[in-house]
Length: 547
Image (cartoon, rainbow, N blue to C red; front, side):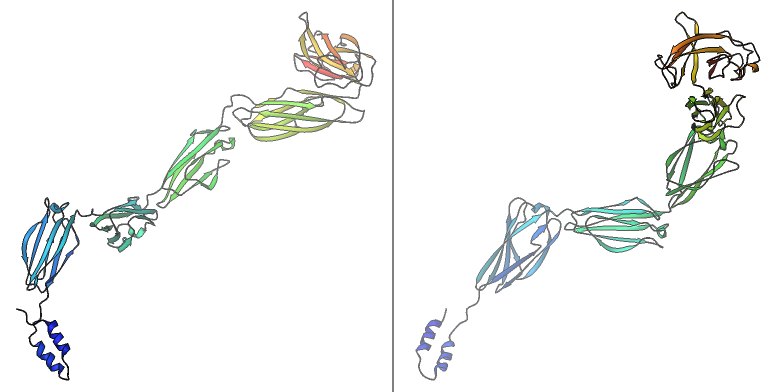
């Protein structure tokens, strides 16, 4: 039963007058009863969302309570319990069940006390755990080589942190709890100190799903020795012919070549080369009979390796003799008596499969070719050329070019005649051709400068003497005499196709007199010598030797 209401008593107190109101208030309060508070309850769960297979803790506390009960309901296989009596405060650990996933529970906590009861509702949710982190380390190369670079790389899933610890005996690589990004790469150079001391390295990835580790063993070895392979094609070189040297290496950073030989053999000292390649060349005749000892050396981190090769060069057999050609300009020239003419001689030589060792320019002034060349050009290549200007007085000359190859074989060019005259008559007999009736005829040209009057010419067998009394055979017989009216002219480089400036020669071939000789030029054996002149007693002005 409640006593008189407090409000009523305060009202009475408020109506009281006088100085003894405190005494009156005390008297009023003697009959008041203090009312009890209703109970309270506070519930906490850690973690708030439960994870399958992981621990959780429920804790609760109350005030003004004498008892606590818990009722949880759920559909399916969710957590359920009915009127579980609990202490007024405490904690209860547990492990979340996979059966609860997808079936949340509604839990009602009720605190009961003198002044009634109070409830709080908690919704329990259970989820599957996050996936465990993974880590994948990779070392390239898998086995490190001292002094050479390597790269360590790693990648993770479901990780928030990565750490690396390596242990090793001796001087092997070590590191402790090195914090790393969740993925990345790190280059480095393997130390020679690690050789023989492998490291055990533990990579650890940590994330919401826990942690996982991978262990790898780091092994470092000494670098391998370099290797070198040399090939030469052909194996035995032939003078004047091409060859190719090729080489390849492994584990090398540099290559050098040194060749030694006696005499004129091939030599080279410490020639720096790429670690692989090819080199073409042409074998020299100077190397014949002087073999070379060539040492190829490959150098790398693992030291050096050498390969020795013996180079042999043999004399080549040329498929053909050398060839030589010669020309002169001018070849027919008129000069003033007492002067000279500058004759430009141009020639070339070639040797297929060999080398032109030298070109020699030879002159025959009437008594045979001189033993001393006018000019010599040395050579070391398959072709060579020569150019020479020679000043000569009036006369008839023959030039030839001699080409000599690297095997000592030689070939002379066809003699090239040069006619230098002080006479107004110029001309040339260039060869033989068939006439319309099938008879052989001499062909050539002749002209007389400085006059437009009619001129005559004669073709003589074995040339007229100079003087006539010096001849050693019977007088020549003229084979043809023809008059032709010509304007002043210059000698053409070759017989003209039509006689517009000079007379064309077309004469029957006279009978040959092989024994006859001429002061103009001794012909080769078994050949007839023809001369073009104005008269039988005139000097030879233009001539040719025909077989």
